[in-house]
Length: 180
Figure 1 (cartoon, one colour):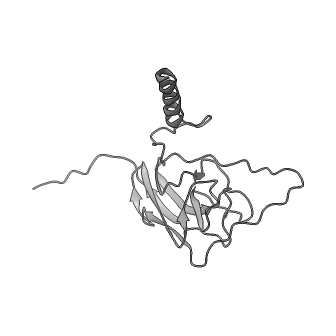
Figure 2 (cartoon, rainbow, N blue to C red):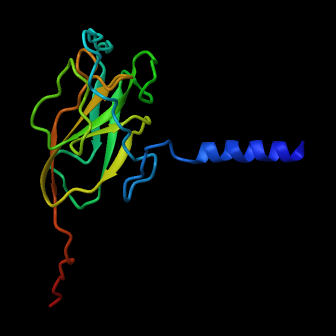
Figure 3 (cartoon, helix red, strand yellow):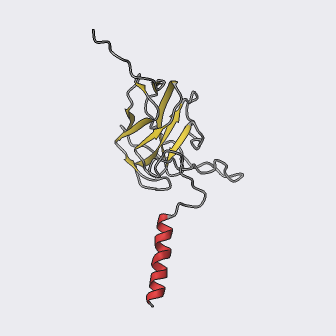
């Protein structure tokens, strides 16, 4: 009996600790910061797209940090802010709640009727994360947040932050000050 209990406990513990099949941890990110994969965008032939989830009036999504126009060094920590709605995991059907998507250097607006893409410029945070640290090369970059529903679709009306621009500076030597 003790052996069966011990084996069952060991299997349960291993299942709780092991990452889900097919998931990988990105270099330099903790599991809480690793974006979740987006679902496939294809729908069965002839299937009608479900209407977007409704967003409550006054919902507001914003980037807490870095500030618009900030000069930063990589890696960059981005903090997400949300008012008037809650943050939940992807797949959750909780009312008035969604999860974050960070758009990096995206020029085209997100389609309000399609699943938000998942690629190096569209990062999904399906675990309910409210901040991340990302590596960006030196230069100008734009950042924008979009809140997605349980199926990674934008809410209606669109709940998105304003697009900000940051400048990532080259890591370099500290300036020496002359003392005369």
